[in-house]
Image 1 (cartoon, rainbow, N blue to C red):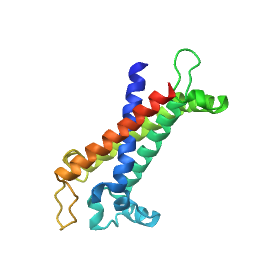
Image 2: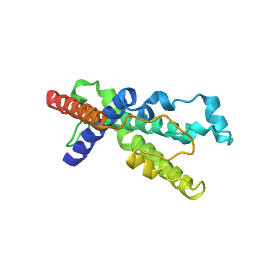
Image 3: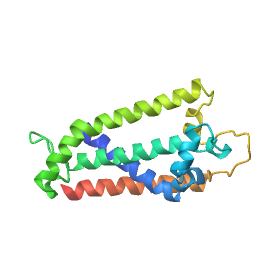
Image 4: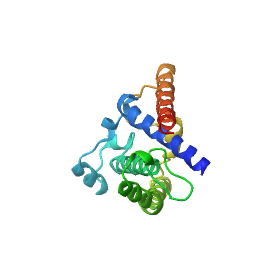
Length: 185
């Protein structure tokens, strides 16, 4: 369970970083660059996507990002207040009412993990679909942060200064999580 908690704290640090980076990061990392209206999503599904949808997150990919972020945050939050009533309890469980702790524990152990597994499988399936059917490699741009496009597009900030800012933001997020855990003990 010690490693379960460590991984949970790491995931929380990464999630906090991604939320903050979604506001202050480079153009294509910002949530504002991939928030689409329901009409745009339906048009994309019907094959009426615009050229800019092939840059950054397309309307379906954006939905996947928001779903993963939301459910991962919910899973981590429920873990922080869970209590198995045997040997382990989340660091914040002692500050919550018993009914909330019980509900969070049930969700964390029985529902949340299944939703996350389903979302990850769906995400991987979509990546494979784009690779096999559309001949579009989405993994390379995810790892390298660059994508070749047939049209001229706005560059994302990707220099030593932005990478240093990203590292600093992550370190602050990790420090916040570590401080929360220390204060709760």
